[in-house]
Structures are given as C-alpha cells and as structure tokens.
Amino acid sequence: MENTRKIDRIIKGQATSDGAGVKLTRILGHNTQDILDPFLMLDFFGSDNPDDFMAGFPAHPHRGIETVTYMLDGKVEHGDSMGNKGVIGKGDIQWMTAGSGIIHEEMPKYEGGRMHGFQLWVNLPAASKMISPRYQDIPAGNIPVVKLENKTRVKVLAGSFQGVKGPVENIIADPEYFDIEMPANAELVIPAAADHTVFAYLYEGSVMFGGNSADQQHAGEGVLFGDGDHVLAKTSSSGVRFILIAGKPIRESIAWHGPIVMNTDVEIDAAFRELRNGTFIKPLQ
Image (cartoon, rainbow, N blue to C red; front, side, top):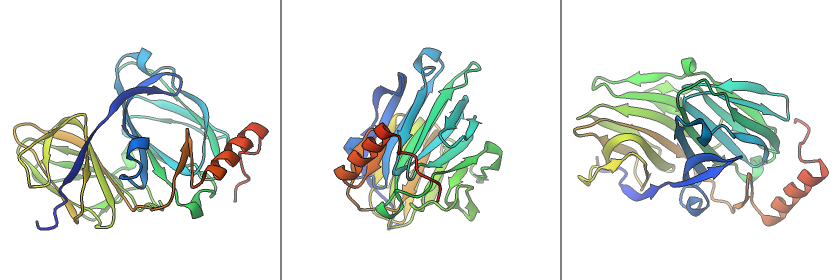
C-alpha cells in the first residue's frame, strides 16, 4: 500500500443556478480548473421539487470541450443543431464531444419523483478542439457492474475495473468514470494510473480515503487525490455512494467564457463572433 493516493484537498460544492434557473451544486468550476486538469466543471443536481429544475437548459452553444451527463433518477430530453434528439433516463450516460461547435438543449421530462444526476465538463487539447461533434449515448442496460464479495458494486461507465471495460470509448483524456456503492465495514482498492488526475465526489453516506487518516468524508464533499497508483476506500458503520473520475492532464492554457473553452482569448473572441454572424456550426469532417 506504499503508493496509496492520499487526500490532497477537500472540495465543497457551492449552491448555484444555471441554464434558465436550474438549482444545482457546482463542485468544480473556474476556481478548480488549474488543479483538476482535464476536468473543468462538475455539477450535481438532485431535487424532487419541479420548481428547482423544470426551466432546464434551453438552446446554448458549446465548443472545445466534452460534456458528460449521468442520470441517477429522472429523464432529460435533448436536441441539437445537428438534428439529434433523444432522452437520457435513469442510469444512462451521454458523453457529448462538442468539438468545433454544437448548439443543443437539455430539458427535463418530468414524470414525478426526483431529478438526480451529474454533468461533467472535460477539456479537449488544442489539437482536438475543432474536431467534428459526436455523441456516445449509453443506456443503463449496457453499463457493466462489477459485484465484489464484500457487496461493493462498481458501475463502470468509462475505463476499466478488474478487467471489466466500460462502454464509453475513444475519449482523448483516457478517462475512468465509476459509480461506486459500498456497504458498511467494507474496503476497496481502486487502481488509478499514476499520471492521471483523480477525484471523487460523495453523494450518499461517508467513507475514509487514503489509509492515512481516521477522518471520514461525507456526502456533499469532493476529494482531490495526490500522487500514487491506487485509491483506498474504507467504510465503517455506514455505507457510501460516490463517483470517482480520473483522466490524463492536458497541461495547456485555458481561455474559458461561458459554455466555450479554448486556449486563447483570440479564439474565444472568434467563437462568439461566429455565433453572432451565423458561422459557428462547422461542416462535419
């Protein structure tokens, strides 16, 4: 256990609203972009009050990033400037590569109950910021779950765990994205490439990370890990649910304005100029 990743810092999300007034918790954002490379933003939304989310995210542009929507409960309808339409439901994941530019919308399809899930933004390197947009829409039934003897469940959305590979493929950041559920009094070792940024966010229960502390992290807290080749998680009297994401840093300059992320202010200005004059959407390559 000499290469166990220790906790580098605890990150607590901030209540905010986005889109047309959706209430959410922003866990990662502008204030963490320098330490979470290649991850730019992570939002958590969870409410059973329609007033908190029904306004949704009307048509808006993206360029230079990938957006990853993972639904725990509820349904979201999406549509875009390429003519794509669909519904993301409970347990589904959508990995959208915005690339050169796309205009899309995400609107709740309310059928009662809770709207609950995550949206992650992943940066693209300069050489790939203007690639053609694409989607990977993965239904819950196509996402494997590794079930361990101690009753731990690891849902493998991207990357691989114990030889089980997730369905999201060919992503530049070489990511891992796991949804992990551990019962009380359990232990889990999660391999993580030594050159990757690794982050976890707890959304139910509590857990101890790192093997060097008896302090527990609790629901609502994010954890950035330091160097090492694996994460060690232990529960005590209660179980936990958390997501763990890992990806290879890009280490390039970031120019970020709203939903568009490029490398320079000149590129940002060009993107918004194209939005104004109607040339933002590029022909598919």
